[in-house]
Length: 274
Image 1 (cartoon, rainbow, N blue to C red):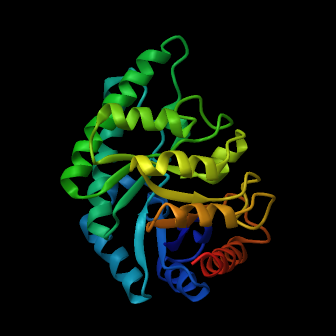
Image 2: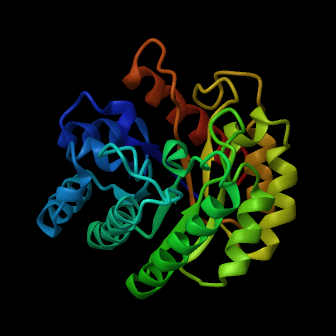
């Protein structure tokens, strides 16, 4: 396992400084939010991806993946019945798959709760349109050699895809190696699920390809009541060799301090559970 930091934690720094700081405190990679690279991620180019890759490599880091895929620009949706909106959204999803491959990332994480809201009175239609969007992107991801991960989020954030079980059913129904799922410890625990039990149940099915580690209080690992030792131990027991990404949303006293603390906690746990 290797540890990564979701880069919006350091968004106030130029990207090269983000890389230097993350490496200095012990991360092996950054997980990139496209809106931190350009205000409109639709404008990201292959040249941008190569610059990102070079900056990471200069500090000995990897691009572990992309996340927060649809938070910008405004107006995107995978569930809308507006064909133009949906086409634009799917177009960006496909472009970000290409960008991920160009930047050297093997994973994308699709959270974006506001862009998967189910239309009132047309919930089943919204689900069907989302499934079609994921199916289209899965094919592009397969061809690009990357994995597009559906992220289950808490019921406080969305009413669609709120459990690993629901995400697993979607992944297995589409049946493409380009579409998988993941576990966010904060989202799971906020709704009362046990991340260890989820790891033990779903990882043997081969569909868990990424891990986000946060406390249910939305702060970084080690900053709340959730015990991360058993989580790391469960991942080890399942033979997980992928990325474990810290994705805090509350930065106290600030982003760099939060990042450094998360790196210390996770590095210590990986040593304690070899």
